[in-house]
Length: 226
Length: 336
Image 1 (tube, each protein chain N blue to C red):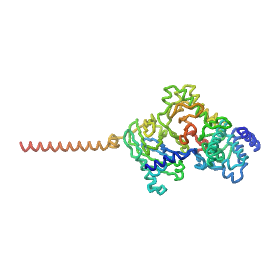
Image 2: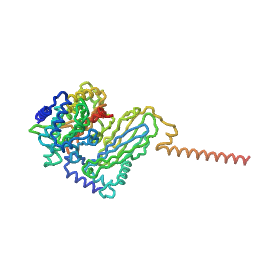
Image 3: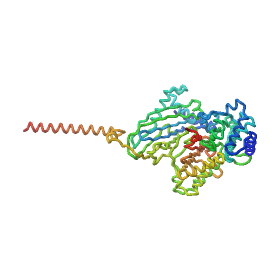
Image 4: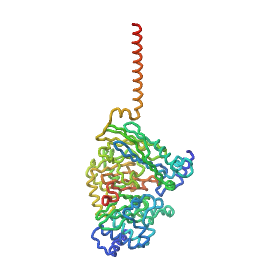
């Protein structure tokens, strides 16, 4: 990694970027699309020529100069591990929809765009929703951008978008009319806090069982004494 | 040069036997005049089917050696053919628009010279192509572009649609015959003036709190409408709204005057629903370009101005994008 960074630094000093090629940044644009029951995102990742060695090191695992389909899939999975998406503070499980890699020559020219599309199901919720997206992929060399599409569903209206300066953190507030929050138990069981509720239920059941046993034992003793 | 090309356009039109009744008929005549100068092989290279979606989307900000364009480049043409090609482009643009195009091409020639005659740059590497058959009634398309330029002009009857179009420049300031040339000067200066006209409350809304590294809806991002941000023009006063329209006119006014007038009328009607957002430095050195990104977005409009950090000073390297999310490539005039 250190040698890659040094090579990149030398490259930056040596090259004359007059041709408009991306140079020392890894541009990572995300466009998010919200529907009532799911969220979709398209990430377009463009490594600059100077940082390409660093990025390629993370993609071309066997260093054979060819990015195989398995390496493409592995890289997409890695990108998805480096980003997170949550709704109303509940983490969402991301699923890759498609991955498209440019030719190696295009990447060497600084114009190769890696395109990763992914989606996540949205649990039912109330009318006011808050979607959060974070991207920490190659944060030392990244130039992040994130936007959302105007919703196609007229029931959904974007209220606010907030980002930090680097756009690594993004929050989208929106309201949806005709929202169906779903049965209480569904909401309760779903999401990241579901296991807490399950544990509480088990504990309550266990306590009830223990109390029941004690009560039966006490009445048994009273019966023996009487 | 500008005068000679426009004069050549008139002569070619007259030679082709056309009596210019309408702007469209003038453009069609110029197209036919250009095509008549080509041999069979050149015609095959210049002409594409109107429904060729690959060619329609084959444009970029990159040099043509990185992203291949379709059509014929200026270097492949004889002086007469080249004049006819530029006369066609000129016929579809306003005087100011054609001047801007020439300055962008000239900037690339300056870049070529500053790079020891680097063959990936220069005025010879701008491509012209026609999709469909030039017609006064049926839709057809003229494309002209290369490094930092992509004009996509759809002609449909009397309608002239310029979206999507990319303009840019590197160097975005150069000297020619002792005079300073800034191809995108007005785009920079008028936006700066608009920002300076805003009061504190308006600036707070217009100035985004985050960095924008590049165009959001650049090449390859057709058919997307992002959520607008910044200051809505309904929150501007009358003078500021006029200033905003004046900034917009730098893109909407590139196409020929009658199409530009129709387009400006459409955008003026939308003005209260149009947003202005700014990201980056809020000052500029006199006589130079801003180094901030800005976006203007309305129901029928997306404009992005994005200085590029890639080539050193962002003021010297600018990319801009002009779109109509409801009518890019003039689709509403031919889509079923």
